[in-house]
Length: 100
Image (tube, rainbow, N blue to C red; front, side):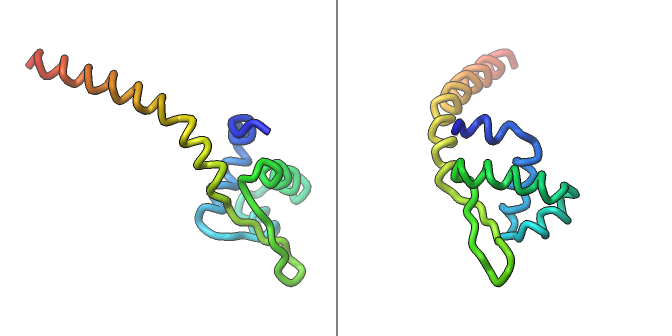
């Protein structure tokens, strides 16, 4: 599954933002994001299958947490683009400095 397709969906990004703060049960995510339980389950399944979250069972709850590895891969893919923009922005800064 394409990581960018997974991350493109706003509700999934909101879920990841919540999980970045703390592990959460499905019910906690439903309450904090005001999304229906079936919708939440659908998005959590996509995130789980893509590796962005993992789940464990605690008593009768499914508790989700964010996983680092997919974000590391996205970050590695973005690195050459960051370098490109840094190079261009540095050149712009040098040019602007000569105009002063």
